[in-house]
Image (cartoon, rainbow, N blue to C red):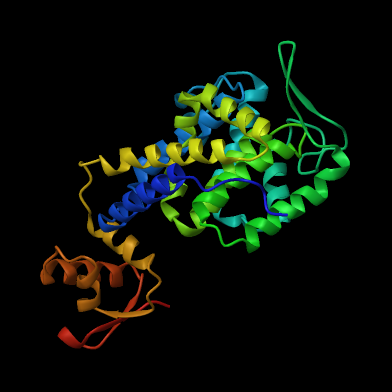
Length: 317
């Protein structure tokens, strides 16, 4: 059964706005930020996602752990961060359409933190805040088939990835398939889903915006529960996604280097090309600059050259 939600005028407007920003990012070759910015954003992602769950480590401490430096802090918090670092470093090894990969990611994320990580819960759960029951999750016996249905939706539905990622995130929170780690898995898997179509989301820490609007995050989850459909949560998350694109678009300090151009071009998966093909991608560089780039690529053994001068072809093996 397809998860219930409505496509509202607001959702259509948000998808259009996000698509326009993604187009601008691609036009400016910003889909792979600089290595330094990638590292900074990875730290922000881990910090925000775990801080939502109560982790006390700072961005500086997380950076130190990434650099294999000793950090003093609560053992549980250090374990959470170490696990998250491992998962995000292996981010491309997970398959977003695979339930088995989903369970492996939970195991990697929660090892040493809970019993039986990577296994669906075998008991009922409820979320209580104060004396108020916030959410009563479906019976544990229903979890396996509910998750199977959710992955079938992810694999087979024709909705845009932007919507499916939000729907998956909400439905995961509703089903609450694990005893712990549901929130961080929802945010993590939404990133995986988006990455399949938009690689830039590997480097965008939209979790920081969720952290900044944490009350609204939980309020829209609760409102969606009350309405019996994920529409409010979709609208909230699309707004978060759109805002997460702004810092990248507003970064006017980045100047593309030869290594940036080569990395971007190789990411296009073109097996054979000429200098003219290379210049058609980077329209603002001179033929001399293109020649220097390609010479460096050959020296770095990124590809091989065959032929001379204007008839030279480059082959990626």
